[in-house]
Length: 417
Image (cartoon, rainbow, N blue to C red; front, side):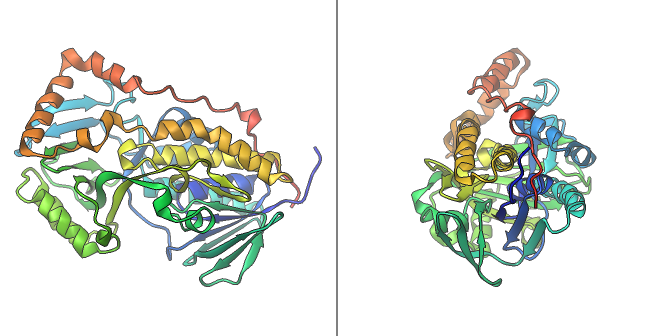
């Protein structure tokens, strides 16, 4: 194999997408700098599932031993009324792990921890190939034919052969290189919130439990630590730009939505102010014609967020990181062309990852008391045993999952540093 000088890659964002890309690049002998604006790794996050192509990618990347050690063993999804009585179940076994709950579920923060551990091991065998900076961010990106010049909030300016934005739905890299967020972000009619709370003593062990109320769907799902659980909320409401960054206003909105909602609404509200991992954001879809512009590429939610309602964000990020690393490693001397091949590779996964089960927030979250009653009745019927085959077909009726390239097509080759 003819060797060439290894390129320098800047990755903005140390979440799932950024860490997975860095891992594969370091394995290929490609120098990678990861910049994360947070001061340290972020804990918590909702459970994410790995199935199909994303599970295959995790296996190819050697992540499964760490994932297996941190798996959340969920039995399935249950719906309850205001008194906690179950009126519908979707067990993982009944749907062979292809329903609302997959066979492999892991908290986003735990998956990131697995990636950091494996990345540290890879970097230890290849000194000088990885730099991980916390507490900094990109402030300017200027492209040239043969390089990208970048300025940071704290560090001195640098030039890189390639810049990858893996910095989430509100990507600064996308804003700096592609244009303002409002050009690509399309509101979906509400907000999502997640945070950790102490596990209620009467919660049915192992089940993700949900409740419909007018204007909201809320629930509690198991955590790796049995003493804690995760609250998850979807709120159907008009968008309010003033909510962004204002935790007090966000909590006030949640309190109004769950006031008098029964079941464990008060438990969730009581835990919310003390939650150190409180997450709240608008539900939006990110649409770009291409995740590539010159020597800048976008990855994960920065490129193609479908919102938490799809349940596919982490899967698409992991798949995208694997495909992008493979293209870079296969043609390090021809990065612009490698990026275009990545854009073509990821496109079918992006389209599938934006599909929202059930048709969107209008069907997932009732707008009125009557709508909540109708949602309860329909859910109870559809999850009853006679209708189970129909529901299984509905879950399988989406566009078929694209096939991953064979390992040989995206193999990580080591280039000379």
